[in-house]
Image 1 (tube, rainbow, N blue to C red):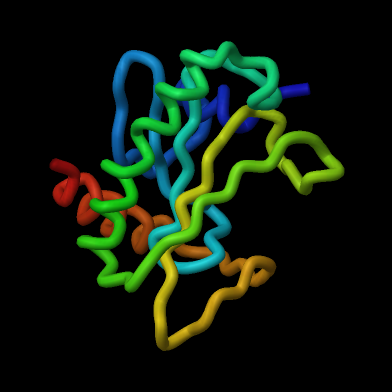
Image 2: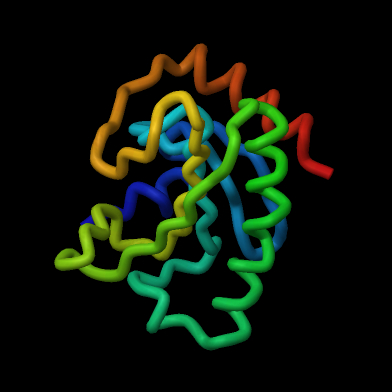
Length: 135
C-alpha cells in the first residue's frame, strides 16, 4: 500500500509546506477541521508513535510550539488543539505518524469531526503566510 505522506515527501503529491528540517516536515492538512489545520510528520516512515524510539518522539513534539505559534499569528486563531492518533481504531487515516495542530476560534466553538475541502490556491496563500510567521 502506498503511503500518501511518503508520496508528499518524495514529491509525488502536492504538500503545502510550512516547515522542513532534516528529520521532519510540516504542511497544511488537505481536509482541515478549521483554517490553518496543519500536520507535522517525520521524514522516516513509522506507522504509529509506538514504532518510534523515545528520542524521535521527543524531537517531533519539540517542533509543535514553533509551528503552532506561526499558525496562530498567521490565522488570528484564539487557541489550538493537538491531536495524534495511532491505529485504525483510534481513527488514524494515514498510516504514517503525524501530529495535528488544529487552530481554534472563539467565534466558532470546537468541533472535531467537521472537515472542509480547500482549493489549492487558498492553501498556497495560507501556507506562505504561516511560513512567513515562523521564527
